[in-house]
Image 1 (cartoon, rainbow, N blue to C red):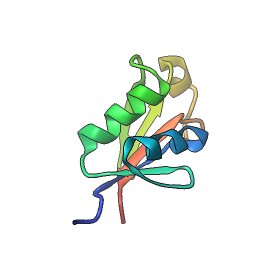
Image 2 (spheres, rainbow, N blue to C red):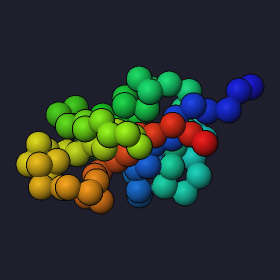
Image 3 (spheres, one colour):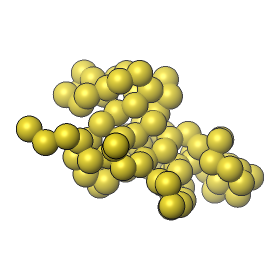
Image 4 (spheres, rainbow, N blue to C red):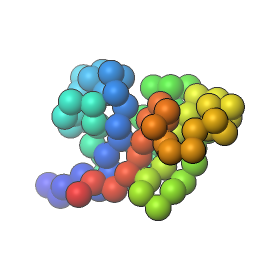
Length: 84
């Protein structure tokens, strides 16, 4: 089995994904594809989420207003990045 390619930081929402067959470590969910990672985020924080791509990952917010108000990514509801 190959190592997961993506990690999703979900904070307290991560734990429910272990029951769905994903590897979960603390606040992180590991998956093989970016598409799957973004689906996990949508199901966790809502279909209307806003995704902002940056060099170090994709920052996901519940609302556009939340994304607009966050210059650092610290207020993101979820972050998708490449697994190391």
